[in-house]
Image (cartoon, rainbow, N blue to C red):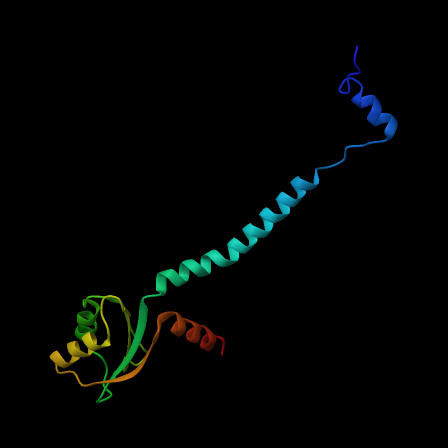
Length: 142
């Protein structure tokens, strides 16, 4: 009759002082790496989604050459242009900020719209939408 290792395992471990405590190293390493990966995911994924949502957007800032206010009819007509996502005015309605999808339209098309309606404009700035949002966030702190 051969010696059965499994039959006397508990007695051997008791005599040798082998104690099973807690979880194994492999389980602990798996948990730690999972926490690290999920933590990085929470930090990186929202920024990536925000980038992909705004990567085609640009902002153009215009004012009227005669420094008058923008009429609501003009603002409504600009909003109906292809590729225009948003139109904002400043407090005095002297400047207008047009957010547009640069894969659909560009500033030349918007300028052509103004020329077609015989509106004399001055292009103040063209900047990426995400960059303008960062600038506005910094300015709001002041």
